[in-house]
Structures are given as structure tokens and as C-alpha cells.
Length: 249
Image (cartoon, rainbow, N blue to C red; front, side, top):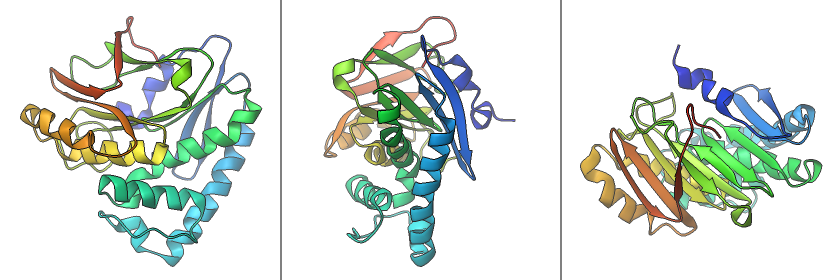
């Protein structure tokens, strides 16, 4: 079985004095790290947000299938509005933003219960909030860079979101061949959608500069990086640090 689908990378996560749990509802599978076990509260949050999303999708079937942006809808639930806005900013369909949007929505719900220290991971998309520096390990499939570098996030920069897309790892739809395309933003939906669009632009290492030039023009994107084989290119506020053996997140 594909290691990404099993999400074994979660076993590398470490946080002193923190508790990590998995919260699952249907297709949603979140890894949550906080000072205490917030599984029940996380499941309740997922159910609430999914309820609004599923009802909206039942009335607007194109929301689930469109690969291009859909018009804003001021009457939609907050999660849906965020996904629609992100799709318009990044030039993608709204579902390209679902993982990041849901990670952030649940993270914000849990924050008051977690004393402002909560990290929510949703298939490579992250919501980060911590009074301590956080290092996020870079997973990039078979690339020799995978597990060797991390992205350092200072407490002053959080809350913050990271979205990651891959054309060689996992089951998410990507039209490119990047081993990893990661975007940093304050908005989780935008980070996710922009990472998808960034990865779609990379068919080979020769596309790195043009892809980064594009993502630098997307309002709200703070930084980005792309890994293709042995090549890595980055733009913006992306502090890369070496990792110890096995990496960490």
C-alpha cells in the first residue's frame, strides 16, 4: 500500500508535552496535536463543517466536479465561501481547497480549548498555531531531498497554514510532476488551492522559475517551494532548516 495513503509520516511528528490524536469522519482524516486529547471536540467540529459542505454540494453539484473557479456565493456556508474565494484566487475548482479549508476551520474551533497551541494536519495541508517555534518536515516522495529539510515557522508568524500538492505522491489530483509543491499563507483554503495550481504548472525541473513567478503574483501567498527530483526552488518567506534523521513535523 502507498505510504502516503497510510500517512505513516505522522509517526515522525514530535511535540514536547503535546498529545496527538486522529479524528475521522467519512473521507476526512485529521491528525491533531494539542496539549490534551481533543478527539471528541474535533469530530464534532468536522461533522458541523461537513454538514454545511455536503448540503451545499447537494444543491450545487458542479461544486464537487468543477476544475475551474466558480462564482462567489454570499449565501454559502463559511467553509464553502472560503473554498470559492481560494479557487478564484488560484484559478482552480473549489474542491482544490477543501483539505486546507477544513484543517483551518477545525483548528480555529479547537484553539480556545487548546490554549492557543494546536496543529491540524489533513493529508499534507496544515493549520499551525503555537507559542513555540515549529519545524515542518518536507515530504517529497522519492526525491533525495525528502525528509532532509524542514520549514521553520516562528511563533510570531502563527496562526499560519501550509498547503502541499504532489504529482508523484498520494491520490490527490495533480496535473504536474512535482514531488512537492508547498505554499504558505494565512488562509488554509488559499494555501491548498495555490499549492494545487503551483504543482499543476510543473512538468519538469525546467518549469520551476516560471511556476514560482506565477505563485508570487497570487494575493495572500507568503511563500512557496517546489521539489522535483534533486532540484528545489523557493520564493518568499520560506525559512528552510536541516532535519535530523527521519525528519519531524
